[in-house]
Image (tube, rainbow, N blue to C red; front, top):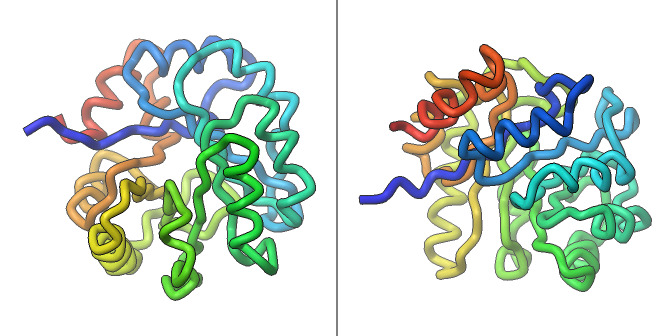
Length: 220
């Protein structure tokens, strides 16, 4: 059986002094997606990058840009992120009063739509939305900073959402982000995840190790 697990390295853990090169390295090393964490210092207590940086690094790879918006509000900036080269745009339901409208805007811009659930976000937010989604992201840390420990109590949530996706009959990525490493990746996969976001674990050891790191995260 072919391993269908996708790895989406978070560039938050890359060397930003040579970010374009780092993206080229993880592309060649076998990354499936490129995970871009966008934080505004308001919705989460950290500040990262915006559309202009995404536009620049888009030149470094043709891989899917998996853009995770941890910003509030979301809707006014969606067009900028789409035009910058995002392929999947994921947002938090707490950031917009009408998440269904946000999903429609994202799809109308030609991007795939994702919804992110914080550890405290109940899976009931997916009611009435799951048929419109291309990706569901389960956070296994409180978003805002890299290097946090994996919250094992979120495994039950991953299992429940896996069941919901399977019952829907739709092809929806179930992505897990937060504390993913060589020890926690198998647990997330066993619970039903098929996309893993890994920053520190991917970029550990420098470019010569990226390929092996990605293989280990996949489980082979």
